[in-house]
Image (cartoon, rainbow, N blue to C red; front, side, top):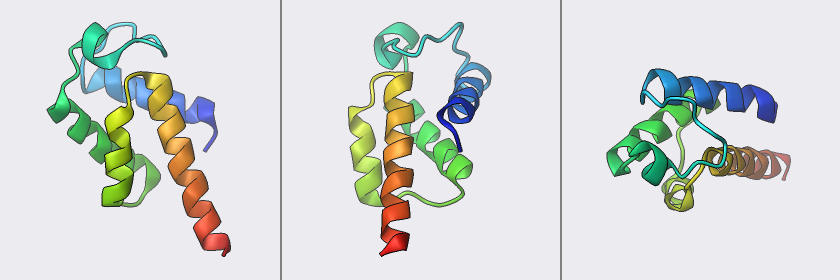
Amino acid sequence: MTRDALQEKILAILIEDFEFEKPGLNDNLRDDHGFDSIDAIELLGKIELILGYSLTWEEKEKAMGIRTINDILDYIETIEASRRLKTED
């Protein structure tokens, strides 16, 4: 999935499910939109649905550093790249 397609899906989730208004890619999710840890857990579940597989505990721990929508996109791209490498080995 391209970054643009991913961005479109993530923005749709944030707008529809979390009621974000006009989210910017570099907005701080917590400070600018009141995103909390429960929201983060729910978003991880939605990311798993987008990806079509469950995230490992290690992958979920890496999500703790996410602060912006761009961070979410980078996070997903990193996971997908890592999994592709594992399947190629």
